[in-house]
Amino acid sequence: MSNQVRSPMRGKLYAIVAISLAMCLYAIPCFAAGETDVLPYEKGMEVFYDSMTGPVPFVISLVGIIGCGAMLIFGGEISGFLRTMVFIILVVAVIVQAGSVVTMLGGKWGTKAQGVGRVGPYQRDVDVVVGTYLRKTVA
Image (cartoon, rainbow, N blue to C red; front, side, top):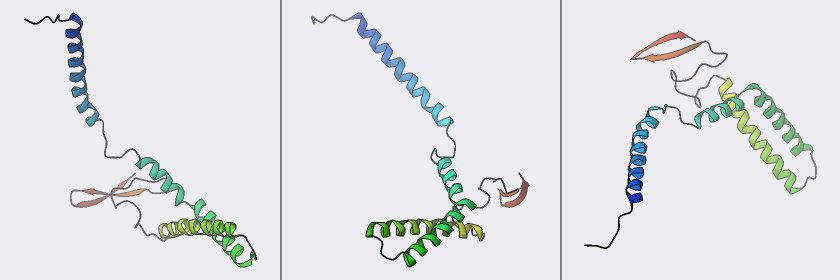
């Protein structure tokens, strides 16, 4: 026989660990049931995309392109750092302008697939895919 004395607290500890483990295992399906098809970072990306393709960034980037171009042409002697900053502003303005022009001309290359997109404030109709048929719905 061994000389070990079993502590009454040891059994309670095992019971607490077993109950905690069972609660964790039952909670996993609850977390899975609450998930949606939208990833958590997509909402922020949609807000950023909408704010970068509207009319205000279009005008700001147009002014930036004109201002930076005029400074590079008529600026005379400017330091290397200032010239680099002007080029960075010019590149960002061209990128925003290109995205706005593509969206404005009706190109949907950078947007969501047709029938999956959400309804915007200026869009009344959305094509919804139902089986193999397309039907128009009014939002």
